[in-house]
Image (tube, rainbow over all chains, first blue to last red):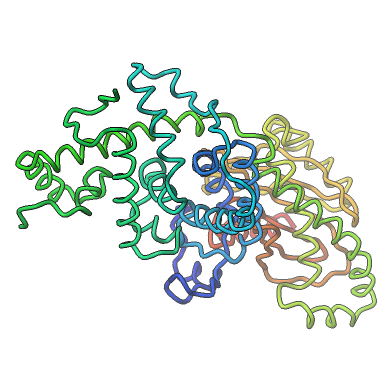
Length: 201
Length: 257
């Protein structure tokens, strides 16, 4: 007998999932305890995304904490088939949106958290460091929805379909936001017109 | 094949999201269109710089409050406090006989005494299975001693079940305290470090039941009562696997008595 190859019929009976999964299904299945380690494995990435999005570790940690609490609330209603990572990013995105709306009134121009440019210390050349600085400033100037897309795709390695799912928009919207974000960053960092890259100044 | 590279393909090429054949085609086309090649190179450089720049954050040690195990443990503990308050009432009802049926009717899930049992089992599992240094009081080499000790305290003869070919090896066990008296906890571990616990709590006078899945804060326990003793198996596996494992545990206990 091998574990891991659960009898599919029994699995269905136990989980109550008789319908194929879909975005609007009323989530009948429940997650087993095995989901916790999978949630745990996603936390560094969730935190990286939150820091990149909010540019503040404290706020990012608050957001990740809220996201985990919400995920634990919903654990027993979660569809087992769904990808844990995309599910967590979706929860966090929704929290980010509702919190941003609440925050709109107060000024959002916060200083760039320089400490998270730790990577800069390891950078090979000064040009790289300057490019990274420009890129961060450019990123800060993007509208939230474009910044989300470029971070989810480039840094978090989500597929375009997963990104669309997380943000709750059609895949075409993901593509157009990605294209706009990358063009803006190209202009902002002075990449445009340069065939060999990283000629920053 | 189109003679220009569609914008979407350019991005998908940079992000490695094209099927290999199409990626090879795009690569060939890039050689013919320097402008597109410049664009792709710029995007790729952005991508690499973003990844490198933010990589350090994911490598940082996590703040303690972002530990889901600890969050679950806290939630289970809070829930258990509420349950313990309710437990006395529930048990009084059950002791009174017909009261149990009133409760059965009200709760959609498993019988309330099984929920009570699983609450204790899962709370103990959360605390002791997460303890990397000392999850057990007596280790595997003191199997007999533990069986005798637990049997004495429970006033019921019990020995750690043998999980045989399931991949879970016996690690040891301990006594646990519950409002209903002492309980035995046997711990197992598989190759991947997953921990399974078997919880045994005497529940004199309770009728035997089938196995029921009880979910507490996202953790599943498979609980049943047999001849006045409650059993719960908890492990971080799918409900189907947990059920299979529990059936083995039940057989083992059956053969002990």
